[in-house]
Length: 182
Image (cartoon, rainbow, N blue to C red):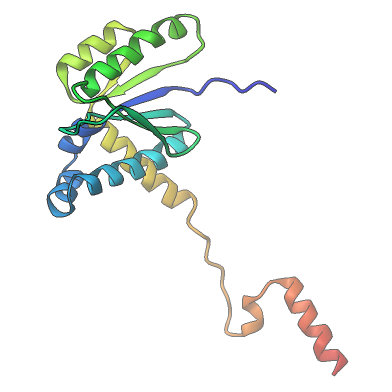
């Protein structure tokens, strides 16, 4: 059974999003940059699972003399840390350029770049990718969370005032059999 391509590939400019979302700015000021990164990754992981996007969150090396590396979070979400001196923008541009032929051949349905960087927006659109602002991504993530809460909220049933009403029918039957055997 061949798996179909994801409905979209979402490329997230991590530090740009952290700088644009007020909740992540607060986390960064209060608990540090690593905590803000973790919060962003957690939010995007839930969002991607809900919408089914293959998601790449990209962070600059950010003043660290380290080699690039990839961290797999889930089947749909990966985090990329660029090489020292490479920006998230250049990494995202290279991915969009490489996806251009896949978009043209319908191997990938959509490539979406989430950033509020205007120059980045124009470049990725030149490669055929779509652009989503940081605020639009924030709105979509929050709307997804609200939808999930409404959809998956457990339904409360009237329990009545007896303990027997709060257990399932199979357990109730076994208790009745025990009572009859005494």
